Length: 499
Image (cartoon, rainbow, N blue to C red; front, side, top):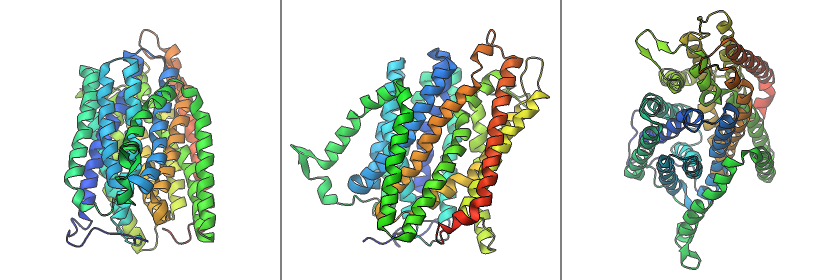
């Protein structure tokens, strides 16, 4: 069995971390520029350009983002068993760029085809670049959590650039220009990853290189067949986006299958691995709740900003509705490095909260963010627009909660996963995001205020509806987070020493 690997010694560390981290940071940054640029424009494009109603736009958004995060389940397994992480990331980048350029066709049909291609590409890209980051460190390397937090900052630099550039261009000059910029960003990420692959080539090798180029079906090699099938699955995903009502059933069946697979592998590996698979599944369920509420950012919170928020920033500039998503990646970048150092300092003093407790704190902070909307009942102008500081405060608390969960969750997966299950477990982790995004799309329908908009203007009814729904979200999150904190000592025992 191949031992846990680090970057070869001929490549000295850069700023205290493996050199490959900086290149994976930049690759992920441009991929997130692509993804968040498209995500930031999607609901606005559906409602304003394609003239879809709120409920239909939320359903499409939820189905699309659910499929985006479901795809890594298969992409992780294909990387583990056939392609290796390096080839999988490159194939994913190509497919995502193709998808963005397809959307430039300008019709609903081309939008859905492009979305389907992006889904397949993300399946190859997302889980496997995160797995590559994990491969840069040994399992007991104390820099591991810090490395993932730095990597996560790269995610949010890309998201920040997407909201400042892609979303702004799309809303001001035409949606097609925004989607085109997103595709160019993905090509830049592919170029950087390819140019720097010597720093992580060994960590991303195919499990059986000799089989990859062997003929398996007529003249087709295993690699060629995998690429061909990847393109052939696009029409199926196109249909799932259109007939998104079946997504709930598909997700439940997928969850059951993946859960059974993990528990089966856990039983084979002994009591410790079994317990680790159990706690992994439990934390996935809490992860679903967190992100279902958090991911309102791209759907209902964007329309809330469009309809009921005074977006004037210090009397200097009027933000677009999509640009209000800027505050989340901005706060990540500002605070991410602080949290990276915080975990190290707390560990040195033996004060670092256990992983389940961090999940509890994160969910509570998310709930506090939503409860802040209550101030909107007392602070609004005659047009029923609440001040910008309310949505800034929402994103601040959501971001702090995110820093307690997301980079820690990525690091946790790479620690829990035995070598042969690394990509599979990372794919299962992203499956929980799939469930959360689908659930988030359904929850967003509760805020539907399109029937309360008169001549494009907000009113008291639409504002009250948003505040009431978000208050309920906040109360549910705070109660759940407190429950997780109470149970965290028992849950942590199932980790068997993983911190």
